[in-house]
Length: 146
Image 1 (cartoon, helix red, strand yellow):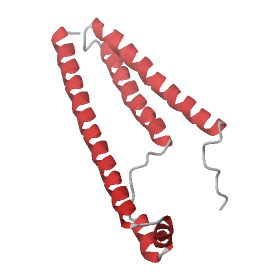
Image 2: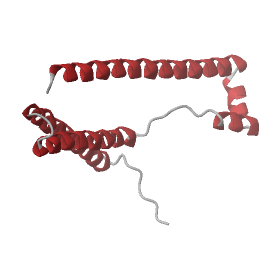
Image 3: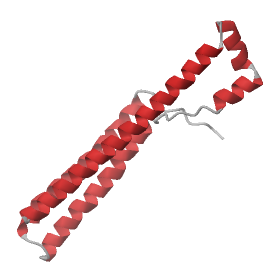
């Protein structure tokens, strides 16, 4: 593969990763600040635990607490992310290998193609192992009979 193409892909990938990391961190920081502000306001509003418990058990308190939905990631979300990334990387690797087999690109693309295929398969295996351990350790919710 041409070194200019590899350099361009590497630079674009690095900039994209840094941008994603910054925006993700800012979002999580804002969420943490919001949670801290809500906790501070709640704690400063009540002078005793009994008053707080009474408020939480009232209709207004229940409605207020129901309105507080903070981001909570499901344990299955990282497994699904592995599956998604694995599929994308497998298709990338397969495309590189197919292009090489058709003779549309030079012989240097077979190595990245095979590596991408292996990485995609590794993501799929990791997702399956995570799911299996999740189920084997009893962390999955029991199925509800209708």
